[in-house]
Length: 74
Image (cartoon, rainbow, N blue to C red; front, side, top):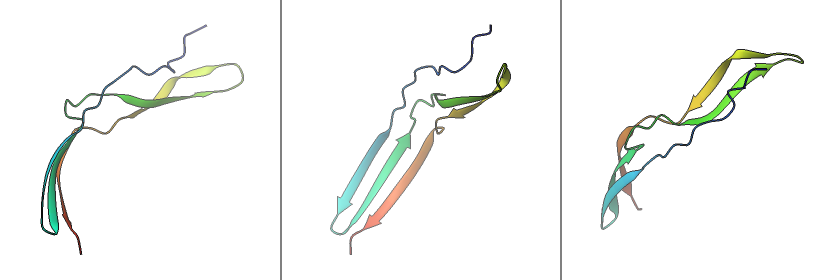
């Protein structure tokens, strides 16, 4: 019997952010998944009563993302 590819490998995702607030406004610079790791949240595969197929779907974590957030308090 074949081993099923159900186990996901461990991964680490680093989120960095720095911000500034003044009076009623604020701004924040952020970097999600700073080292662009390729982690997997989940794997799914299709099985029937006697056989599990070799094709499976991998749900990866979000790729590296850089952004700016602006805010204002009213």
